Image (tube, rainbow, N blue to C red):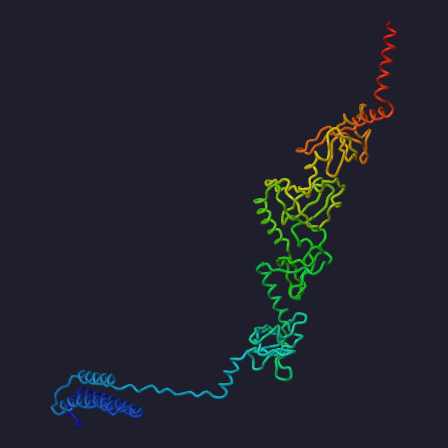
Amino acid sequence: MSEVNGTPEEKQVEAEVVETVEEVVTAVEETIEAVEEVEAPIEAVEEVEAPVEAVEEAVAPVEVVEEAEVPVEAEAPVEAVEEVVAEAEAEAPVAPEVVEEVIPSMEDFEAEIDASLARVSRGDVIECTVISVGEDEIIVNLGYVADGLILREELLLEAGQTLAEAYKADDKVKAEVLTINDGEGNVLLSEKKAVHVIVWDELEEHFKNKSRFTVTVSDVVKGGVIAMIKGIRAFMPASMVSARYVEDLKEFVGQELEVVVKDFDRRDRKIIISHKEVDKEVREVAKKAFFEEVEKDQVFSGTVKKLMNFGAFVDLGGVDGLVHINEMSWKRIKHPSDVMKEGDVIEVYIINVDKEKEKISLGLKNIENNPWNDIESLYSVGKVYEGEVVRLAGFGAFVRIGDGIEGLVHISEISHQRIETPASVLSEGQKVKVKVLKIDAKGQKISLSIKETTVDEEAVELDKYTTSEEATTSLESVFKDILKDLK
């Protein structure tokens, strides 16, 4: 490019333009080299060169300016160059991204396999899958590099049960790790120990959630009973066995009871359970339902709970009723123990129900064998029978003349003489003869007399020693003598 003779300002502008053009050319050349390295199409390279020619053409006006010595505006060439550069950058092709393929190493494969395998330690409880069942052991898959082995003595088997009966392939078994390597590359496990751990976990959950579960009472100890929960000993205090008073805890041995955990200490291996809350709730529900449906004369099967001098309390299934001693038999008994004992299951019928006070009167007598049904065929008015004084009262004495048949001898019918009390001439257990005065079969009452029997006895004695003829002669003689004296 020839030197231009001009003012210093023009020369400065020319130098700046030339310097800018050279920078653009350099940038374009670098772009071409990048395209060639990635083996871009030649057409793309030609498109990149096109802006270079445009740049050279942009320089031409500058030369013309130098030759013509025409003043040049400083900003015009710079703007033209910037436009050319922008077009070149926009049209230049983008080199494709090169993806480098990564081939994993053996170490990578080993690490991936290790990550997929379970990590086991002694004491871990693991769910395993049964692979095979032998005579004395089962082999299981626990997701470890080695298989697991559970020996017969570490399995949960019932008496006489074989491994083939208890386990089969694909069964799920939870077992505790005893050792990682038994010397032959197997992991030794124990189902029994795992169950022990699992049961403690379950009991802890019951304690936290206050949930209920069922146990079987196995033994009676001082202060309560024992229940074994899958090998774990649980204690139930006597006060927590039932909502009612229990005199003999042995009645619960062998029974299944629904309980809750009241106290739990895993470290000290202590667990206390209670049936009282459950029993109380069950009884309340049963009692409500019972009194809604019960009716007089209904028959129930109940258990004798407690004997008293006056009767017996019978459990009808959550509701207690009283059988009075007089309702236990048609015969007179001295004590309820004469006909029943605690724990007996008996059949009773409802005599009376007080639903408001929740009280029930029961009877044990067999209604069909009621002797009062045949009273009139067994006893007759005016007849004399032998009986036994069974009870004395201020107004008279009760005399039993047959099984279930007792009659009243009023105080006025005891003696021809006036007496203060029946006890002054009679005593309980005394044998006496009574005459039937009145029978009330419907009201089950019978009126008796003792003094009437003495009149009858005197008449009988008189008949033994006299005849009607003798008696008549004697009277005639008496009257004859009286009339004779009057004359």
